[in-house]
Length: 219
Image (cartoon, rainbow, N blue to C red; front, side):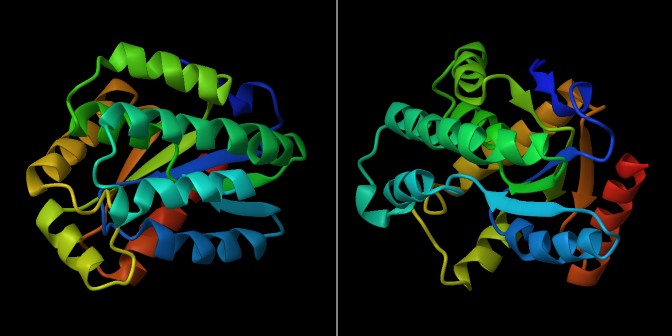
């Protein structure tokens, strides 16, 4: 089980760190802004961001990670680049925003590393990866993580119709199946932090389920 400092332990209840996770094509990015607008309409201060990226330095690292020209990147290089971008967003964005009393919605966070670089590549010990994550995040963990769960083939089909196809998308179907299985293993390890939403449903139904899930946690 991954043990980090939960932000609710050090801040009032109106502050919350929420992350969206899931396989490719699950719709995380399309749902974040509407969720932020919904929360803002309730008078809450909301900030949205993404991983890798979210800072000027992180966006530069992201370009290296997703560029299809970098097909020779070794999995260890990939793993370390993600941690470099993550360390920057934790210090520059996440900690200050949460300390200011905001709700932060993040498109991916450290669970993506465990799912993709851990279970997907299947080359590293998870304990080793968790040690790197602890260093990069300074122990900052989400209060709520929502898995947008979706069949791998359907997700890749959706992603292929967009203009966002990147180096990680281009991994084999078997890789992406290991990623999805990894997410489910992570849910089983920390059921109190995770909630699962069926991302194969229509967009409006998924958005409703996300709002219900977040609303319940905010209470």
